[in-house]
Length: 484
Image (tube, rainbow, N blue to C red):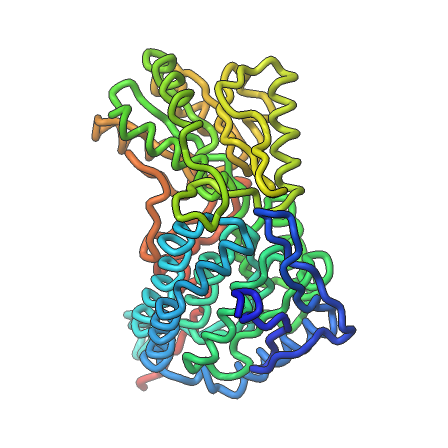
């Protein structure tokens, strides 16, 4: 049985698999070959309504929300175990669906998804309230309660990880969930529905509706039975999500676009810095909100670093994601490939120097683009200011620390930043000044469920991971008891 055949291409609602109400289906494409591998049900408003109703019924009957945190934690622990037991299948599925290199799918995506559920299994048991001292003869305490039905809307680039970063804390807090994965990459969400059910998550607690954003996503966003929206995606769509949720006064967590700056000071360990820089912009073929597509380099080492990148970047293994040696796979869809091409063409028009790359990589009809390094662009260039979301790195020189910080903070985004320096005082000083939700020092993409991440400015608000994420799926109730 092939990987995609082992995944039901149906909607998962109320613990049952079913076709869309109107029978509609949508194609799933293998981006490494540009060919259709399977189809899945395409949900419409009626299907979304059924999923929300199932989630509401499951929440109200208390089969999950009424459990103790310790009991929910046991189930989430089992989810983590099942992810690890099915690691090969999940990695193959994610590689097929997104075009991720199979080695990275196992080491990064599957591992982190399991860690998500394991971490929140522990945290589910520690949702403590607080006793408050009052100047009256009364006992006051607070307690945290689940919000209700959560709409989790996830993107195409990290389907498994970003689903886990929402579902794990939402479930740990006692909520029920309707998950709408990206229409391009729905397969791991459907597979996870099976594992969650097998782990003991009651029927209706997790529902999965596959379909388009404008139809299924919009219906879910506007449904009055939804109590919270957790969204990861573009800033443009995020503004719409916030606007619609605001009309109904629904709380929202939004992790949006990014365009992170990676600063290399003259005292950096260049060998280590280059490794982090390359990882920062080619990881996941550059389709990483917290990637580092803007490199800022101290002028004294600028020519040297450009020379190193010109030699090193073309040598990063690119090819079939099923090959264990591959580091860079295809873009997830043809439209993303075309967007990268448009930005590189704009850079050329503006007189940029293409240090390396700058063209497609032909292989089996897939959506491949060579990792590209661009220099000699003005800071106000759209190529620098906007999110390209592909394997493209722009490089700019700076003269001092103040200029480096000013350049780093000069875009509308603020999701991540990085600093390369051997000066500990400088590392802390610059980190304090960077407008970003997370700052990495002397490496890139160091992520763990215990460390919260999220954006400022146009990169969104709220936090994924850590106890901060768990708090975002709860509401606080105060109880005051008179002792007279």
